[in-house]
Image: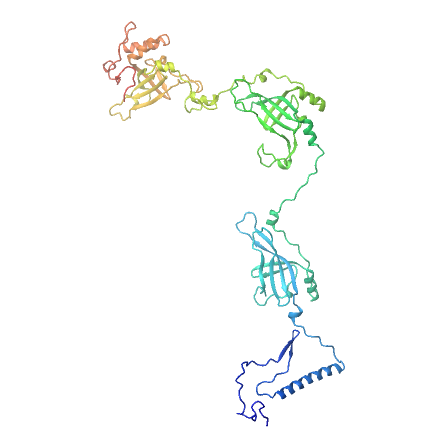
Length: 571
């Protein structure tokens, strides 16, 4: 019978006591890790076990292991040696497959681009079959770059099983989370690993060019070999040396049709040209300093730049193939410079000496011009036709002055004839029967030679009476609009017909003031006009004209008696 060594009692049921000081009740571990490998270890004694017996068991277990090891060492080898077990996390630790590829991202609502090509790097970790997608950082790209997909096992399109390294190869499409990645290349370690596993690696593909990145890239510089011409020597030897030509600007194609003298100055220091206009006294032109500023004049434009629309003064140096040189300015020839036709007829003495020493083949003899071209300011200018707007005098001022001025008036005539009005009674000569019985008063203003017409109201006529014509100058029919001839008191005789803008009025009567005024100007008035007035008014040439007629003298012709002599009748 075993004896309980701690309490001295037989090891029988009921004779064992619980250790009240014990605080750990975990199970005893049977494995111990040594150098990363899990190895079995002998069990330790527990509560109620005999320490001697447990030590004996541990000793026997150790002896068995040692005896088995000796037997394996001493027994002759009849089979291949066992390969030691190496876990996958140890064998494939820090081994990563790296693939290069790209994906296309569509760009919406942009006129500059339709899509972008974004390069990526795919990492496959052989340790746990996880993958990671990275995008290389590009400076100032404006896109969130870096890690696109964190390290994880990427599922296939059908979400059945994740991707394996056996599914990866070059020139292959890989769809992950709705994004289609194209694998184009890999590194040397990845190629060796796949080939060692029996996978035939495809040929690499070139990476497509991103159109937006290529558009933003700076253009390639084009280098032009320097010429052998020494500009410094030209500056030192030709400074303050100017060729001067005398020319005529043929401006006959414009509305003025004139020829104006100009001076062409060619600066030898930098091959620039300046055109100055020759101002003459009392020419009526503003003295502008230059007609064309100093600049290089292009002679020949490149063929590829000809159809491109451009302004005349905005030709860039890249578009010009050849500029004007001194040999192009020849006396006696006509040149077309900046849209102007210039005819060179002479040059100064320095220009002649320069051409004799440098270009003797160029003729510099003066060319005699016709007299009509030399007198440029005596050309008669044509006035444009009258357009009918406003008065003729006001429209003419637009052609005579840059800033129109009001036409000049005869102030003496206006002061002498102020408030002097010649009044006549007229009827409308019309084929319309409704115009019968209409009575008009025609007033002629001596101060401004204007005519106004007033219609006297007639009871139950159905026609609105009042002012028929404002004060205006009435031209005679049969004359041109540019050279009109207006009515004067000499034309207003009794029985005469006055055509007022298409309306025909027949004068039937006048007041005594009309006869009195015309007799005072008898030397300028025809005798027929005076006789018609005397016969109508019943005045003998030897008698006086008397005063203004009354209603009894005019009868029922509707003359309104004026309030004072020479005033316009009231409505």
